[in-house]
Length: 192
View 1 (cartoon, rainbow, N blue to C red):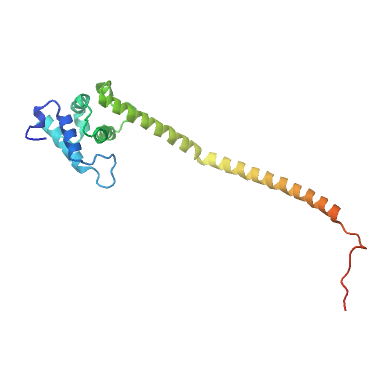
View 2 (cartoon, rainbow, N blue to C red):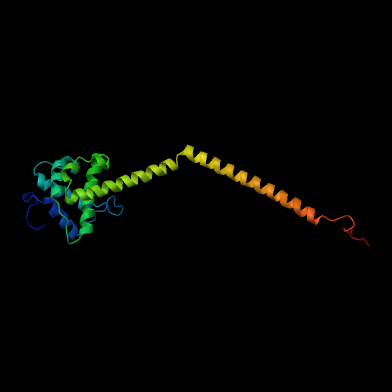
């Protein structure tokens, strides 16, 4: 980021994101390896510089400032994939800290129509797809529905087994009719 203070530039977030991408800081959402502390702390420090005197504990505390900065962020051509992951991380952190659903983010009107707005829209689409799949899973695994499905499967197995038994009895009857021996054909073993 050089010697320029982030608060001196209107693009403090763009500068931070580009620097974080260049330094290859982890910005994986819910990273189980490191938790992305360097990225989080760097973002908090950049926001603190942009805010000035007031202490900043959460991104959500300065939501308006972060939203305005996000609206100005443009894609970074040097590493677009990593850059988008970093932006997603910030959007996710705002969502997580606010405790809102992904469709209720208050920054949405401020970033609509921007590159970040497109990232947010894709995140929301993904969120709703996951929620739909979760609802299908929950519905399918509802204990009452599972019990009903199991009872139905048992009934079908019993019916199939009963049908096979009837078929076997009929096949056995036919076999015994065609292979029945008369008493004259039977020979008793002779005992010496």
